[in-house]
Amino acid sequence: MKSKIYNKVITNIFLVITLLFSMQALANPPVYTSFLSNLAVSGYDTVAYFTESKAVKGNAQYSTEYNNVEWHFSNQANLDTFKKTPEKYAPQYGGYCAWAVANNKTAKGDPQQWTIHNNKLYLNYNSNIQNKWLKDKAVLITNANQYWPSLVN
Image (cartoon, rainbow, N blue to C red; front, side, top):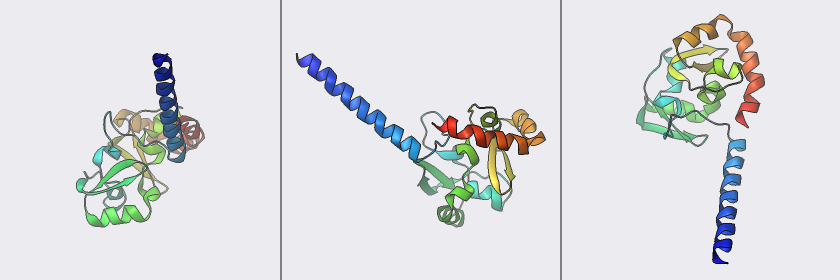
């Protein structure tokens, strides 16, 4: 009898936890982080892509939380800029590879393989994929925008 009650309690706890995580996922689209990490864009400064036109490693001293993950910046000014409008500087599709999303899949985005198009940051899996991305990015962005909502849920 005790084991049946115990099993019901454990099952109910599991269901509540699952529901809470599901609600959180709907409220905030997923942001890619590497396995066992809570760090967005592998710790790179997303503002620097726009202001310095290069990938710049961030510093934990200048960090904030956005969409339930930690973001690092190379200086206080970039951190402050991000905090004002994080959606402007966060990579599209949560930092997943934009080419993969355009093909209805997900793959990690490499912070060294990036593009800014129409004032939005896109990451790609590697240089080969980025070359494919660059050849037809307008069509691929249209496709990715269609697929992303279903990939998020």
